[in-house]
Image (tube, rainbow over all chains, first blue to last red; front, side):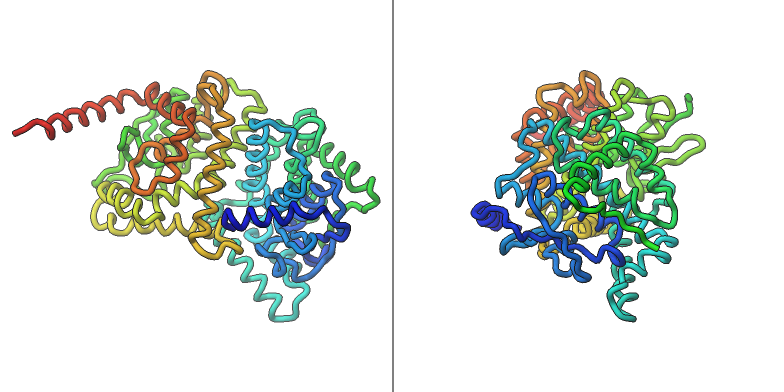
Amino acid sequence: MSLVAEAFVSQIAAAEPWPENATLYQQLKGEQILVSDNAASLAVQAFLQMCNLPIKVVCRANAEYMSPSGKVPFIHVGNQVVSELGPIVQFVKAKGHSLSDGLDEVQKAEMKAYMELVNNMLLTAELYLQWCDEATVGEITHARYGSPYPWPLNHILAYQKQWEVKRKMKAIGWGNKTLDQVLEDVDQCCQALSQRLGTQPYFFNKQPTELDALVFGHLYTILTTQLTNDELSEKVKNYSNLLAFCRRIEQHYFEDRGKGSSSIKSS
Amino acid sequence: MAAPLELSCWGGGWGLPSVHSESLVVMAYAKFSGAPLKVNVIDKTWRGSRGDVPILTTEDNIVSQPAKILNFLRKQKYNADYELSAKQGADTLAYIALIEEKLLPAVLHTFWVESDNYFSVTKPWFASRIPFPLSLILPGRISKGALNRILLTRGEPPLYHLREVEAQIYRDAKECLNLLSNRLGTSQFFFGDTPSTLDAYVFGFLAPLYKVRFPKVQLQEHLKQLSNLCRFCDDILNSYFRLSLGVDHFLLKVNHRYLLSPC
């Protein structure tokens, strides 16, 4: 979006308060959604819970195509549609709610850097595992991704998506990585997050920020999804403070409000 | 431990030991950690490979890609991060991810995709250091690879046109530069008084942007306004690369005088 368009959207956003009927769209939870999309959706849900903004989760098979940027999740608020955590954080900020206002410039830089680390390593590793690891692709991903569609559309869409993701992996230099190297990268990332978190309750001490929401989304999804091999979740389980962190956010923001935990199991 | 370490990388210009970001990262880290590196600059001979530069060769190993080379040097006990705390080590990884996600697309664009810059500066420079007929093919291939990377990682809807993608990546790069400037503040290096891996990465990506003379310079102009980052680059150039800088400077002065003297 150009600068003018962005400013315009912010103006509109700022004009109205958060409505009661805001909805978040993602793919079907039980049969269709994949690890990376579920992580993103959970991150947004956690962020909105932390801001105390009510949101209803609606599952639609074509959520990916409804989204303005092609990525899930997206939220429908008033008459605006915003997708992905970054723009949603901006949008919510324009409405006057923000989790990172209390941070100084250096901390904000750190927060952005760590969010990029999670996107760079964890998200890319999840995409690699889902789409480039033959075992997972064959057993889980293809079946899940195309499940709402009839034959042959389910195969065509799955192969198309796989081709797209493989192209992207090759462009950023992950095309030649083996699964072990990817798992090592995940381990490095988790180690960095664990060292940064230390013994604090949240990354920036007492108050959660969008970084906490993002990390929670990814780690929780990794921990609660059953894939063909458990190595990814084993890597995360090595770090006890990260496990405690996930449990804490789950208790505070999800169980207390009467929602069930959003774990998904794939057969 | 005393095995000769040879690095093959692209050469320098405009006061820099190398104009290639990744090569510069490795050279800077080697200087910071005290690794004795023999630098083989790629030239017009057919010796050595040009593909995956920078490449580190020892007696038994060939290592490519900056991250792997730095890991290898650390295993050989050349560690510039010795004094960092665990949290600072984690911060290093995070800031490197930030640079790769936000700054790298715009740097690639400035060097390889922006047509004025590419055709008047980058392509001639690289082509003059690659033997014919590879000089006709390789720069074009690198340029296409850069454009591909930018479009695949950033060119998703609703940004359909390359111009909109360009606007977005330059905006992200400027924000990233601001964040780095805020983080650096008035310190000499990012973590205290000794340079570390993060300093090597920041120097590697910023110095070419800072020094190379381009026709289209919007990112460079923005960088020049962040005086602490410019000071950071100049400090490292003066302290760690002074010898090579001195030679270049001397040659420049000689040429200059020769050109000016009336004949």
